[in-house]
Structure formats: C-alpha cells, structure tokens
Length: 81
Image (cartoon, rainbow, N blue to C red; front, side, top):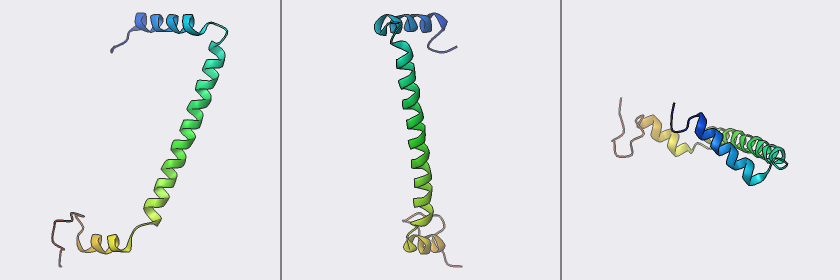
C-alpha cells in the first residue's frame, strides 16, 4: 500500500486530536481549506501570467534565431536551406 497503512494513519489522527483538542479541529480544518484555496488560486494566476509572458514577450532575436537554428542549440551553426 505504501509507507503508511490504516494503523499508521489512525495513530497520526489520534496524536493530532491530543495536540489540538476536539474543539480546535474544525477551525484548524477550515483554515487549512482556506489556505489550500488561496494556494490553488495563486498557482492558477502564476500559470496564466507565465503563459501570457511566454507568448507576448518573445524577443525578436529569439524568433530570428529559431528561424535560422530550429534546434535552439546555441552551439549549433545556423541552418541554410
């Protein structure tokens, strides 16, 4: 199954319950859910921002280089057809 089985997970949950107490667990779960939502939103924003930057900010020298050297290997000589 992997590194952790059901007995291991139950022990971990019991330790968390002892550390935080039953009263604080709902607030802890809510804050973890909010954090995960914010993290997902930021990751989506970064991916969309990265996609815009990659498509809009292509250097003309890179376009010319890719036209003459389609392998994009800086050490390779330009291809002539």
